[in-house]
Every structure is written in C-alpha cells, then in structure tokens.
Length: 146
View (cartoon, rainbow, N blue to C red):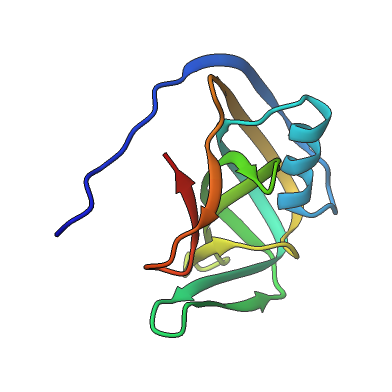
C-alpha cells in the first residue's frame, strides 16, 4: 500500500540574501549562517561557481551514498535545498547541478568539500514547528518525521 503524502504548513520568516565567502566550503557556509541566525527551518538556492565539488548519489540497493570529487572550475547551474533539524541541530540538505566550461552537466547530492569560487545565497526562513530528520527503515535515509 502506497504511503500517503504528509505536509506541514509554515509561514515565511526572515529572508536572507548575501554573498558566500570565496574559498570556503559551500555546505559549511550555509550551516554557519543557520547557526549564527538560529535558523531551524528554511529553503534556499545558490548561484555562482565552485573551484571543486564533492557530489554523489544514493545507491538504493546498498543504501549508501556514493560520492566523487571533481577538481576543476564549475558553474553552479542550480543549487537548492532545505534546512531542518537532525539530532537537534540545524542540518542543510542540498542538491546541485554544475556545468564545466563546455556546458557539460554534472550533478547530484551536495557534500562537504565543495569549495566556493563565487556564490550568492537566497535563504527563506520558515516559521513553525521545525521538521526533524529521522532514520527511515524502508529507504535507509534520514527523512522528515511529519
């Protein structure tokens, strides 16, 4: 029997727009803003470029992430994600689509080790009871308890 969708309503909170720090880790930079600003729930997007990227995909059979590192300049075609709680702390979850100088695409789940060349962040805080990520037995993933 299929699982029924479950949704939670939130209201918009603060809206952050800013430049991300050159040479820093993309995920860690967003996490630092969330910690500094006490953000527990948010959605965000990033545009810009990275000097290297660590991305991956989830192997559904083995229930593990498979990652790889690309050590070259890449344009951020799109990067979007959300912030919620995991083990009581703000946790950033993002996917990214990149392109090389010839426009060849490369994308997947964003991991630490993606270094910002230039980046602009748009982050919308969400107010309400924050969602928390918990282990899902079916998929092996840390999914929202709703």
